[in-house]
Amino acid sequence: MEMTLRWYGPGYDSVSLAQIKQVPGVRGVITTLMGKQPGEVWTEAEVQELRAVVEAEGLQIMGIESINVSDDIKIGTANREAHIANYIKSLESVGKAGIKVVCYNFMPIFDWTRTDLARVREDGSTVLAYNQDIIDEINPESLKGSMEKMAGGFVLPGWEPERLDKLKALFEAYQDVDEEVLFQNLVYFLERIRDVCETYGIRMAIHPDDPAWPIFGLPRIVRDKQTIMRLLKAVDQPHNCLTICTGSLGTNPQNDICDIIRAAQGRIPFAHIRNLRFNSERDFEESAHLSSDGSMDMYAIMKALHETGFDGIMRPDHGRMLWGEVAVPGYGLYDRAIGAGYLEGLWEAIEKNE
Ligand code: CS2
Ligand code: MN
Image (cartoon, rainbow, N blue to C red; front, side, top):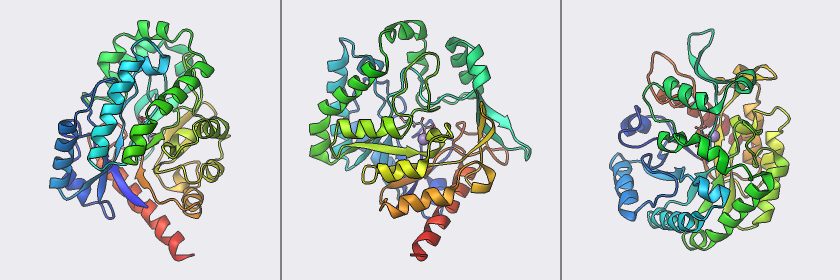
């Protein structure tokens, strides 16, 4: 297991590589070219430049999160082929830089969705939170605006303003895309990028939908054991893999995360580990990583990963905002460093108990 931290790259992150390097056990980062729009090519020079920046600090790029997939590919428009060709070029650039894991998602229009990016907890820390009643009442247009406002000047990953400025047209374009169409478009995409992934040994680790159910009438297809296993079997190739994200799958308490880890054994190169606290069936917040602060048994999750031979990269997914830190919502340094240490502690104990 390799513990990593996500880093948004020069100009996009308040956290520096020098700080990340001081987190015990962390030798690598998960990063991206934040300025890229979905559908654009990542050139070799751009990826090599990013790599040089990371390596100059004595760290390594251990995975990419994300090369975002365009709505054209998800919908299957006339632009799909051009965008897939660009995606293949991007994978070539990444592969040539020796990077073997690429996280992506196949959620229509919105990446992860929260209704509050700074809910104040009893101890004064702030967290990302979700309330279904709010989602049921608002229109997506106002969500975009409020997310932007709450982000306090930071660009949120997956919420590119350029793309979301065309929300109305985007919703119209998805009108005939139901779950089955979206699924088939995902299968098509995975088949088309298979060769380049094979050439460079790249594993495409799809990120589960967050929250794990349809919102705003848009389909969601990576949300539980059944949909995940259907996908892994539909393209039963080594490049078709899963990012296990406990916080995303865990939004649905019916999801037995340990069971999903066992079912997808061998196909999980990347793990996002975080905890949630449910205040009601319709309201949850992203708690500290510690089991006792949330609803998940982090020991059981780490144990399931260990037992299934997980040897991939891991990161403490989101964290709380502590001690007055100002950072990308969910991505402050302090709580993710605490989370990394805690998860490494669990892992060490599990290994020594063997
Ligand atoms: C991440 C996702 O910050 C997060 O919630 O887990 O945004 C993730 O990076 C994307 O869905 C993957 O494409
Ligand atoms: Mn995640």
